[in-house]
Length: 493
Image (tube, rainbow, N blue to C red; front, side, top):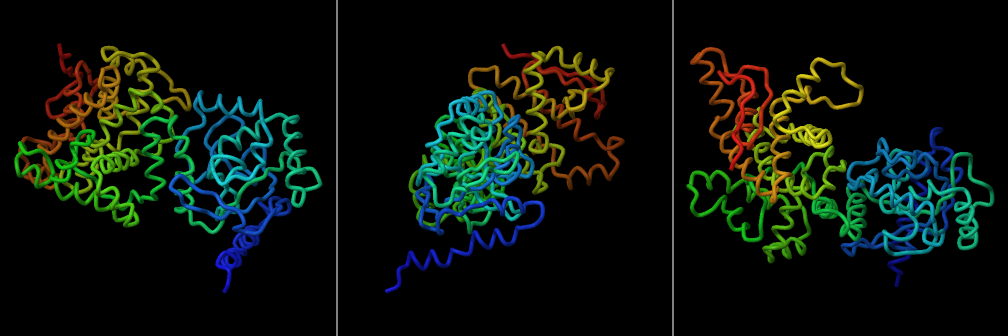
C-alpha cells in the first residue's frame, strides 16, 4: 500500500522550487542565489491555535537588514513603521507602539540564538514562519517580533547565532558570509497556501499571544483565523454593544416593547448578517456556535469589531482601554448608518463609517493637545489663520460631521462607562437619520421647490449629532437651513 504521507510529500515537493523558479528575476535574484533548503517538504509541521496542521520546510535565507529583501516583516527594523506592501491581514498588532517596540528592543539586546534555531510545531516559537508571496518575497506570518529583534541585534549576537546555526544545521548552512547588508536567517516556509489561507494561519498563530491584547485585538484575531470575507457580510441594523442576553432580540429585530414596524425592518438585516458569517465556516464549527448563545454573541461582536477600517486597526489609539470601550459601543450604530446609507434608506451624508478614521484622528489630536469643547472653535480659528505643517493633521480640515463624531468619542472616553455613553448618543442619531428620510424622499420634496434651495444635508447631519453630545460646541461657520454657527448641547447635570 502506498504511503499517504510520502505521496503528499511528492505532490507538494515542487511547490517551493516552482516558486523560486517563477520569481528569479533581476530584482530578487540575490535571494535565490543565497537560499538553502534544509529538508524536503512536509517532513515538518506547524499547528495553529485552531489545531490546523501545515507542512513547512526549514530554509536558510539571506534577509536584508532593512526588512525589504529576502524576509519581509510587518514593520521596519529601523523605526518600526509599517512595511510598504506588507499584505493586509497578516498582522493586526502595531509593533510600532512604545510598549511593543520596547519589547523588541529588549529581545534584540539579549538575543538567544537557540530560541530561533530549534524545531518547533508552534508557529509562535522558533524560527519565523514565512509565506512565499506572488511578488517573490517571503512575508512573515508568525514571528514578526522575533524577526525584527534578530535584524536589530548587534553583530556579536549575530555571530553567536551563525555559530549555533552552523552546528545545528550543518548540512544546509552556507559556508560563506551573507551578502553586504544581509544576514543568514533560518525560517520555516509554508508553501502552497493562497493569501486567504495564509491570513488564517497568521491570525491563528497570533491568537496564543492575544491574552496581552485588548478586546479589539482579540476580536480581529478571531475574525482573521476564521477566514471571513467582510465583503460578503451585509451590515446589521443594531445600535448598541451586544450582550449575551441580547441575541434573541438581535435576531428578532428588536425588543418586545418596540413597534412591529421597527423590528420588521431590522430583522432581515440582522438574520442575514448572522447567516453570512456562519455560511463561511465549516458546518461543525458553525453548529458549535449555534448551540451556545454566549459564543454566538462573542462571534457576532468580533465580526462587528473586525469591520473597523484598516486605518484604525493598524493604529495604537485602541491600546487605550477607554477608547477601546467607546469603539466597541459605537461600532454597531456606525455600521448601521453605513448599511442604511448603502441600501438608500437614509441619506449618504448621515453615514458615520465614512468619517470614522478621520474622527478617531481628530479625537487623538484633541486628547493630545488637551483641548476642551469650549475651546475647540478658538483652536480651529487659530489654525485657519496659520500655515499648515506638512504631515500634521489640522482640526480645521475636518468636516463638521467628523468633528461631531470625534466629540462623541471625546465625551464618552471621559465617562465611567464609555461604551454605554456613546451607544446612547449614536442610537438617537440613527433615529434622527431615519427620520430625515431616504435620498429618494428628500430628492422628491426638494424637486417640488418647497422652502427655497435644497437643505445642506451634511451640515444638518452634523448638527443633529452635535446636539446629542453633552457640552459639545460645533464650531461651524457655515449656514444650513437656518442653523448657524456654534450650537451647544447643555451639559447634563
